[in-house]
Length: 504
Ligand code: CA
Image (cartoon, rainbow, N blue to C red; front, side):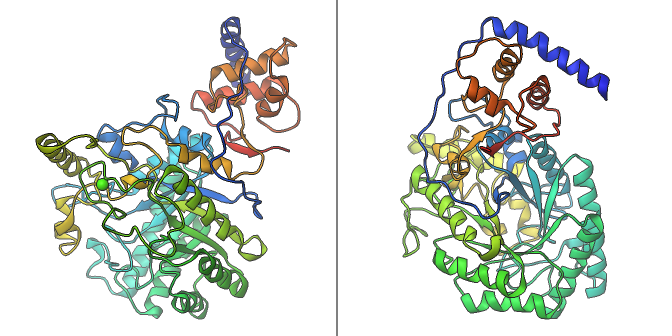
């Protein structure tokens, strides 16, 4: 271990000597803040993002770049823009008998493991969202996996327990840092084919028991919808208590075109927090930055749908998208006693696989036809036709591409949008650890600056280098800090995660 460290320090030194020769004095580029910061009660407030469809998008040829156009791993882009938690859904077996994917990211356990592994490299924890289904589970459908369809309740509970345990171990062994597990997705009306409260509670407790056995440090979340039905969602909190469901986090989706006011959101989350001592969270939210579609599949929010209402307080613009995220975080942060755990943005990277903007007539049709073939082959649309056998009435009829490409934080060509800055800007006095030259990303010139300061050479922004380069945050800038940041740059784990932190 020691030897490895010495080797790395040497590598860093050599690299730096080369780089420092043509190292240009850094000029701080401060982008204007897109939102006001929030005084978070909980210093670890979750600024999360669901990117479940990512692997299939990348397989379809999508790649991502920073706002200034530098191609990077999207996990690095997200971490360096202030995202600190990644969420991923898990379906048991989203494939037909021939192995064709149902689509929607074909999110089996292996995809969750890969997404979790990559998130951990950039210091982000993982929330695993088990649907206990082979495809989308939501208030309209909670169908058990194919393999479990003939099981009675006790058999299903055993299956839930075993599947949860096995999946979590697979994901952990890949290198993911699992911080939270959702037992079911949007389980307002049922879970795993069960819809009586007594049976739902047993399924939930089977999943929860597997998480407890996996690790006592991992939070168990239960996720509902429709906070605007105030009495119903409060009754769901009562139900969890009355049926002794063992959980930590009371979560809801919050889509402002359906789900009521922010004041009511705080109110219902407070109910679970104050009455039952639970953490409270928004497990999904999103907001459109335009009403345009960019892939040829109609969007959830468009000129014809979900674009008006009393609770749509924001413009359909980058600024409006960022402000929505900020205001939802603010509403969750208002929950009593710091019980507001955080907010996950839903599928903030689900962009087009083939940009249809500026195309008309036959060109447009040709591009959409090409996109359809990619959605079918890679599973990166919301559903593929192969889902017909499992979900004939919905996905089997309306399969296609992304319905949320206008709610992503990336342009149709994959470049980060200004709205992504919200995840940094909400942090009071936040800055990107390791970014000593203040250019918005952590790379070799940052290490060079640290080493110049360490050996007493002059640099233009010494105070910034000392503050931002102190990776282990012990108040000293040393060669070890350079080593930790170098490890991060080359994709190795560091004991001190790089990301947006707060000034001491
Ligand atoms: Ca679309």
